[in-house]
Image (tube, rainbow, N blue to C red):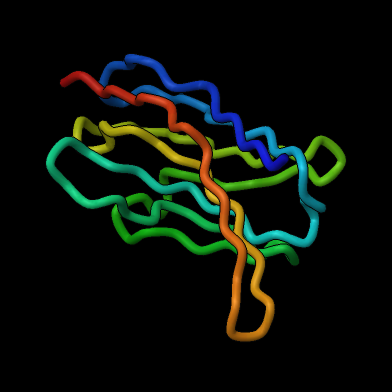
Amino acid sequence: QVQLVESGGDLVQAGGSLRLSCAVSGVIFSTYAMGWYRQAPGKQRELVAAISSGGTTNYADSVKGRFTISKDNAKNTVYLQMNSLKPEDTGVYYCNARINYGLRYNAYWGQGTQVTVSS
């Protein structure tokens, strides 16, 4: 059974920092690409940051220079360090694990963790 369990969401003032964690079980973690997505009220879920199985990272333009994604293969955990938080960063943050098999893929989601940034 695959499980992704996020933690670290909280209420924080603008300019503050948070670190989200996502603990993964049931898959060979090191072979999966990991991503953090967020969904604000009334908006579509969007990719915030991703890290490939090899460690290559990419970020949404809105968070570049403020957020850092990283992973620890020994702990089967991916992190999202969020600095200089803005009210527009508010939303539910979801962890995603994905592996491609040619034209097919498997993807799994966590239950989400709420991040609220007050102005």
